[in-house]
Amino acid sequence: MLEATMPEDSKEFFIRHVGNRLPQSHYDAACAELDGLAEVIASRGIEVTRPDRLEQARPFSTPNWSAPSGLYAAMPRDILLVVGDTIIESPMSWRSRYFEIEAYRPLLKDYFNHGAKWISAPKPQLLDELYQWDYDKIDPLSNNKFVVNEFEPVFDAADFIKCGYDIFAQLSHVTNAMGIEWVRRHIDSKYKIHVIKPVDSAPMHIDATFMPLAPGKILLNPERMPVVPEVLKGWDIKYAPKSTIPDSHAMYMSSTWTSMNVLMLDPKTVVVEEQEAPLIEMLADWGFEVVPVPFRNVMRFGGAFHCVTCDVRRRGDLLSYFN
Ligand code: DAV
Image (cartoon, rainbow, N blue to C red; front, side):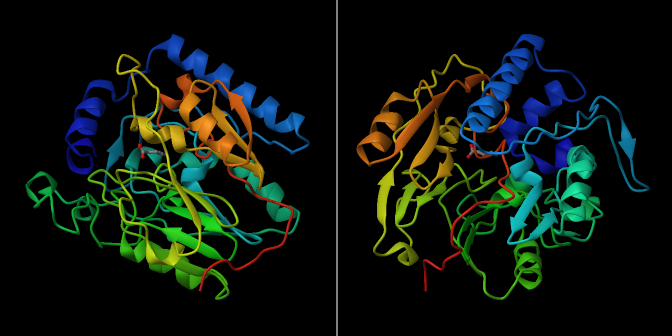
């Protein structure tokens, strides 16, 4: 898997670490922060459920390939796409994540027993043919410079972000056009998918690039969205300030833009990493109640508040905000 699917820097990272545990102290600190987030959310009257622990340090295989271990099951946003009363299991393109859904199966069965619709996209084969083996040689300015091609539908749910009846999506190193089209055909036709095109050589998940906060308010990544998409006309748009994470703080699986991966508890209340002072100040000035939560150790593992959560039910009216 590693040789074929990862851009250079990530490829080196995985070759060094594959099958190995990351430093135990980083892991312990991240677990404590995650528990802290769950407490903060629950203290606001929101019901929090947690997935099962899934042992990742086990090799597994299909008839076509084998993986030395799983990755983790820390980011429900990557794998579960909730649209209305339907929960969709994503066909993720990383072989290490093939069985990650098992951590969520008890919860999914429970939601099903309480009336949810529950579907899974076609389980991808993840044959070698899916991956662009000559990735490193593709023109970096090409619009189609992605690690995955169109061999079969693949997507991570985190390449979609919802705004009422509007869903924004991006093509990325884990989401292809067939994947986006599969979602479009399987959700109610009242929903509209808008595909945006960030300027990003390593796109993987839209939620550190394009972050709707409340009706009419959106936070954009200044490097990846230098041009505001036409569809946002009339919206109050602000660019996220750079993260305060120092270079000395090891980040394993994402850029420091994960700082803008905030979580809206309601249209006025936003959870932000406690050391991100410029972002906290900007959001407070913009009229939000900011809930600062320590999360730097979780962020090392490639995601922040939006990534580690998946809101299955929200109160309020489902509206259409765009034409
Ligand atoms: O650096 O843009 C953020 C989210 C990953 N789940 C990045 C990735």
